[in-house]
Image (cartoon, rainbow, N blue to C red; front, side):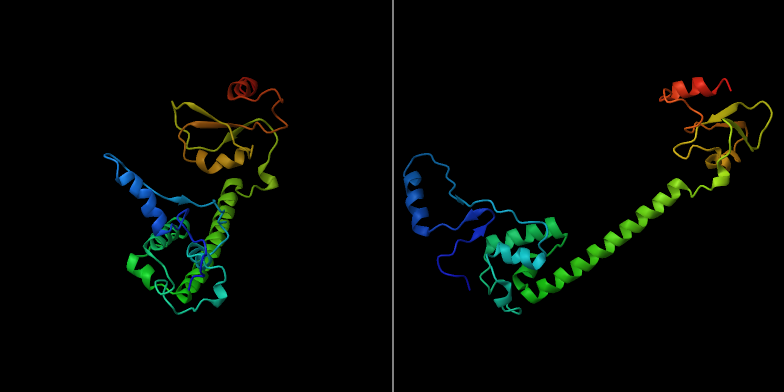
Amino acid sequence: MQEENKELVIGGTLQQGIFSCLDTLEIFLLQERAIVSSMVVAEKAKVGGTMNILETVAHIMGLKNIKVVPSNISLTEMGMDSMMAVEIKQTLERDFDTFLTAQDIRNLTFAALQQMSITTKREKIHDTNKTDANNLEDLYIMIQKMKDSDFVSGIAIELNTKKEVNRGHIFLLPGIDGCAAVYMSLASRFKSSVTCLQYGVPNIPNECHSVMKSAAYLLPV
């Protein structure tokens, strides 16, 4: 199925003529000690991550026009050799998380590759939607949907706790929410008295950017 005199790139190398290989190897084989490797390095072509499984396999096999390829002929019948099979196997595992045996790859057809491409695309869309939903859920948990009534004036806010005698005193510093309401559920479990120091923008000068400086400013209150 391959066109005559067509450069076929496999694993970053070009095909070599057998006579060229023998002529080159003969020089080294006549030497007493020789370790020889021969290859023709092809120009690196960027294979974008936008190609699907079908297009990727066609690229590895050097097929330019997929539309003219019979869909029910196996890759072996299309001219796939052992080097192509290895590269296809490694590429499917690395780029598409698809694991096939050597026998599976030999029996693959372009119709099967087309179906695999459709399935992979659907799974990718599903995973993206699922990830977006999880990110939104995490965001809602983080901001906790604070209400306007949760933001009260004042710096030192006493919180309701299971206060017991001879217990220490706990000071809580809220995070980006900057209000005592974020600690109400947590403080209700403490057996010590708890004070939340609201260090929102209205309560803290701009120069207090560290915990030590914030504490030094708030504790005298």
